[in-house]
View 1 (cartoon, rainbow, N blue to C red):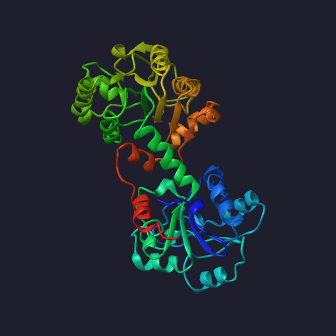
View 2 (view 1 turned 30 degrees about the vertical axis):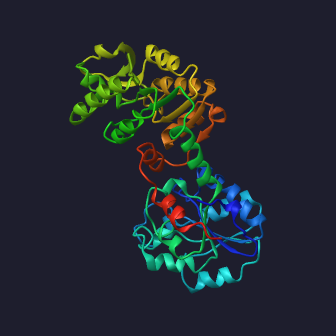
Length: 397
């Protein structure tokens, strides 16, 4: 897979697939521009190289229909401010009008196309739609890691039409950091997996058992393991249909000599609310009508001990309902321990990313991934269709 800095971009029309799928308020204002900022190194490199830059992205799920609610116009405005120059906005992503706008561009100009998903061909990986996108450019750059696990016209089929294809810096960094951790990790190697459901992450847990020295499981999903060990879990989140799977994972960890860390105590309440009464109890003593909503102080201490002296950490999923203050201590404490560890630390998933920022330690994390679903699929050991497309069809320049 080539990278953008290995291709001659001067005087070329460069199509960059970005991920501007940003949160917006009801007035259509972008509330967090982090995803836009993440692409600045790639965009600036292309403009500095003297190319005409055509940016494309999706936003939300408009289901193949044009809708003002999902327009990328606000992203063009924010990007103009970040780049310190006008970003031309095209009101479609294919067609004569767009082709004319692109043909009028000068070197160093930037144009942002309207939402790719206003056309049903995008999500269907439609060859005809991809061909129309490809007509706009000489060089194709994929910088959208967050959607690289989805096969779409703008990240898969398009590579069959453009001779010169490469990864942007964001996509390259995501893959390189991930490979550092998963393919040849410095040891000891620890994975921290949290979040709500075992069913969402069963493939992740199974794959990680083949790689890690220690596997820490927290969050709501831990209660399925605790029930599988024969303890009552009150009203805590528990997937009864996953109990056998949880037992299999525990047995496999023993077989592989992987240190599996589960909570020993938890913060409980009768409901998940900021103003509710909370208590701390041992994991085997959760009362009938109460639920575990965070890891307790004993678990924080045990999990933090397991992170001392390690060399590589991968973390996906919070330790509790950290959005509510009474149940935030576990996640924030683990974030602090990861930051203090001195290990190569890679964090993925929107909730975990948010937690690390709220804990005030994001600057001490080696790499924060921009992909939620894509990061999980990599953790499962799955191949990424968009990366495969670059490897198969890129290489000519």
